[in-house]
Length: 130
Image (cartoon, rainbow, N blue to C red):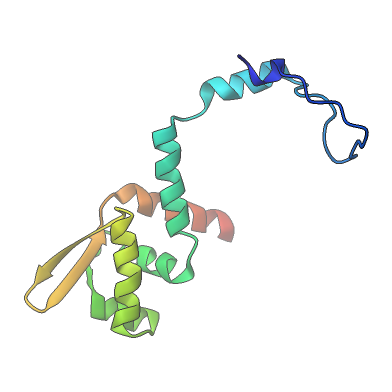
C-alpha cells in the first residue's frame, strides 16, 4: 500500500506548520519511494557519515585518504593528543569497518579499508571550499 493512500486522523487543533492531508504529490512520492537505495546501502552510508561527524576522525580519515598508512603514534602527534586518545578514535573507525590495521613489531599501522571513504571525504571538503 502506498503511503499516500492513508488518511490522517482529523483533529480539532490544526497546526499551521504541518500538512492537513496525508500526501499531495503522489507521483513524486511513489517515484522517490521506488528509487530509494536499499536498507544495506543506507546503513553503510549512515556508518560512513557518523564517522565523519567527529573532527578528530575527520583528520584521521583525511590523513589516511591518499593511500597513506600511519602508525598510532604518528596519528596521535598529528591530532596533538595522547596515544590512548588516538587509539580510541582508531578503534572506533576500525569497529565501523572503515579502517584496517596491521602490527609491525611494536607499531600498529592503520589504513583505509575502502578508498571510497576517501572519495566521499575529499568530495565533501571540496564542495565546502568552493
